[in-house]
Length: 193
Image (cartoon, rainbow, N blue to C red; front, side, top):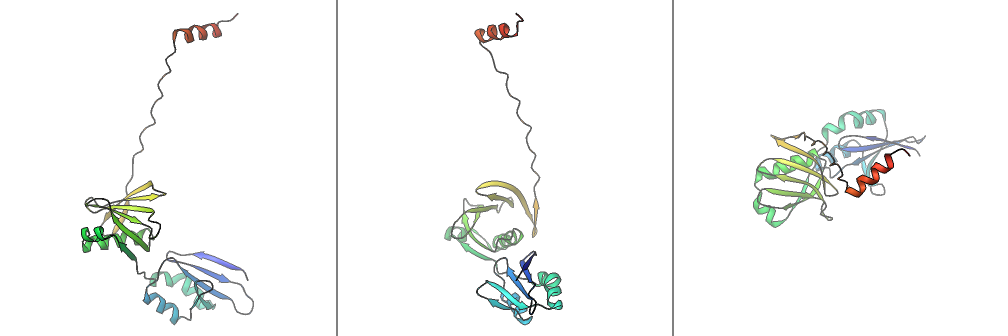
């Protein structure tokens, strides 16, 4: 049984080439909401616990539906876990902004911690590895990879836009100052004998 993988925005799907009954598998990238699960169940998908994917017998109609229409219908329950201090400092609009940010960066499960009154950490739950920081005052997002700053973004009315950063010019190396003896040695090396 050969499987071909296709990457979509919210899920991966796998098409098999079995002779008698080809299958189609849908692997959600995160936690799908109840409405998405209902859509999949209505179309004949059953959850295959061995493969941890939704499976259905492949038909041409079903393949076209998954390839073109399912992405538009996919909804997510973004799961946020809060540090108690962070929960006290965040307001309802801030929580919605964090959800929008998580959705943009495809983070469907995260732990929110506080650095100071306006700066919040978005971490992986369990490992608490830093994914991003969000400043509720300036609406800036810094994205990290292995705790190193990668890129900065700006949150603006539900949209996340990249901030272009100017790279400073490389510094010129200072000329090495030679001692008197080194200067004499250099002159002797250059002198043709």
